[in-house]
Image (cartoon, rainbow, N blue to C red; front, top):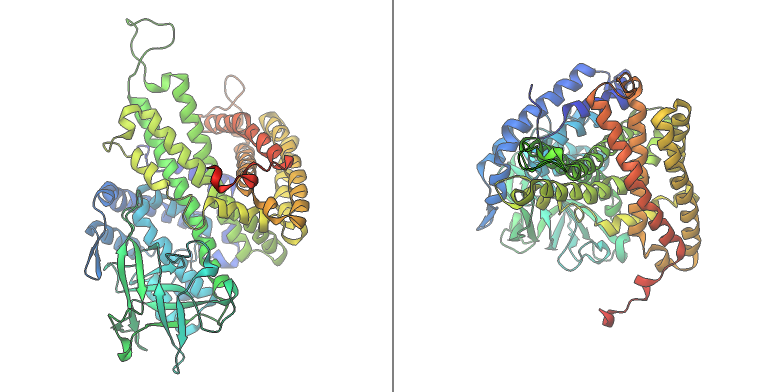
Length: 608
């Protein structure tokens, strides 16, 4: 079997089975219907579908943008075909409960499957990402009737889903949304307003689109405390599941993006009166749960989407790395230093600086993939382990989520930048995929909460939660790994010695910042992005140390006393690169945070 330039199956097998031991989850009741064989079979199927139906139209979806024709959106037909194949394989509900038609696959295995689709064609894969997130939210918070009417058809691939949060004048500040929901005598609501940046908001690839809409009921409290959540379907659904009238929600414009161009991005208007279900204007909406609890419920979908965005960023970085590596191995260019023109040319990989760029990419993308799958395993433990273990897994996942979203969005984008550089002039032409991967990935630092918002979430909420319990959960796990590495000895012990003082310094700096926050919240969060980036590097260094430990006996056996097989040698070298060259950069960031520097705080608007 030839090596794929979409994703590395060998790396996935190592992470899932040698490190995370995901098949051991099948000993628990929730996953008892599965085994390593069934997990591997679903991953094999995903790789096959990604190669055959997603990858071939990746460039075409980029070149032929969605088009708004009247009230309808036209997309290239290959997108619909790919999504039908995805749904026919029962992958939409792969991780969902069997009682609603899902496969109940461990979430770590499910994300390994999705990594293939994101790497092959992230804009087409975004549709099932949104749909499964929508379904999960309704499974957690919807009524039995709502689950029957909307979740089952989504799992079957007949409906798709969206999340409608932002508005033209509100953006990420959801406290300022103005979409209103007027209660009706029959228990429904009529919604009026405009949303913005809604991915998957209109198309004809499914029988119906289930919009989850944030809105405010008149008289509700101000700010985020007054936000409610509503199901607003494109078409109303009858008691027997039949499709009814067109709802009063129409697309009034499309956003034209630099990447993810196959994922239609829309400006929906609710209650414009172009459709009048039941004889009157206003989009018919159905309350999910109770009024004024909408934002908390929406975070069920948002947190899942944040892991999805992080995985998508990782996959784009990963496929860009593999494609630049393939190019570098096959492209003759120049000669070794000191040899004249009579010497034969060597491939690009014969040059140390090219190897540096490839090694940097490898350290970013393999570290990020390991982080995403580790977070997915925490989801599995939080839903299937005994109570204490489940609570600990959920607490650690809570801290890691902003990092799992933002670190790959920054550093796997950097990997795409380096992939372009490896290809040289060819890299920025449309003849090669790497320039599209960069454009697609550039959206991810903004998707599902910007880089800055994730920094504020990490520092302002997650690590200080419970009097610092969040930070303790994270640093405690890292310290445990360092302790194990010290006992094992060898390269792992050296890596642990490099990592441990940075963990100590992170605790010191976080404690000092928390004291600042007690009296000056603005100063506390002014450099939250620097904190996010420093903590993210420490986490990835820890994840690399975990991978080195998982290699076990594969680290020896070679003629020089090192690894005998290239896979283990490559992992060790990537860990050596990251801990030796990348991890030390956190020192300057932590010192900046500790110094109380006020450069950004004291900057005035009229000085720009």
